[in-house]
Image (tube, rainbow, N blue to C red; front, side, top):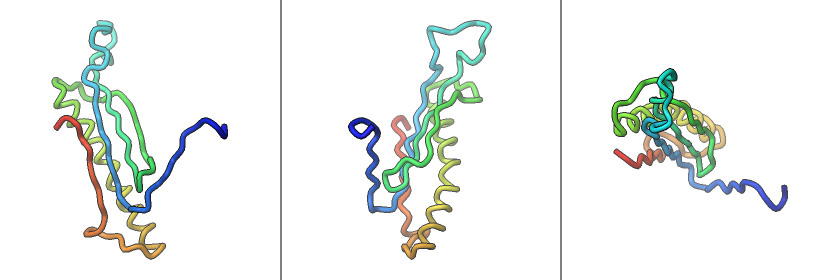
Length: 115
């Protein structure tokens, strides 16, 4: 509606930010012995371009992590895989509109909280 909703204000700075996170064994304490997904960790990440979210995901990890650190590394790896096509897209779009985008000017940051 006009008075409620999600307000997105992209910045003028062409930057890419990746925010991965993991929830280790997310159903710990609520597990069901017949359900192997109960011990899976959850990966979540958001990738923004110019402070505007372009990719986000939350899903159970296919691997079974044995520690919080391992779950975080798996989440980081999954989100980093998504960065390369986005970097290519930003490069193509930037060149198409005449912005100086390249390997030396593209600002990519990964904001991992537990490594």
